[in-house]
Length: 119
Image 1 (tube, helix red, strand yellow):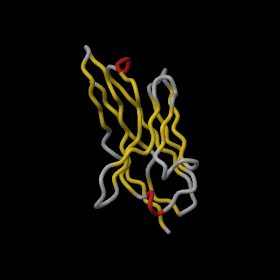
Image 2 (cartoon, one colour):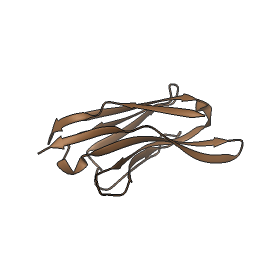
Image 3 (cartoon, helix red, strand yellow):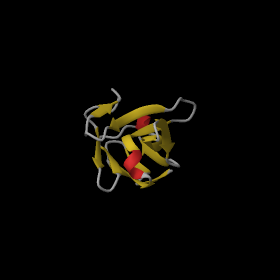
């Protein structure tokens, strides 16, 4: 019902910046909250940041002050600006969209994009 395509991952030196983008297509009027999760090798997937359709944001403590999530509701696109990157930010980053269709809630996931921060 909703497809998410991420872009912008890559390799960066510690202290550097990357910007991740995620574009949604499909029944985009059903999208409520959009966000980014990440999963590092051997670790559980965790929330990085989320933004509601009303632009209320939520961040993991580990990224507060360094990452900024933003959203273009007209295009249903969500970006994650990552500054002052650390090696511990290395992970696969996934875009998510929370949907409500015919009264049923679900979550769509992107395919993931690799972010590697070299020390």
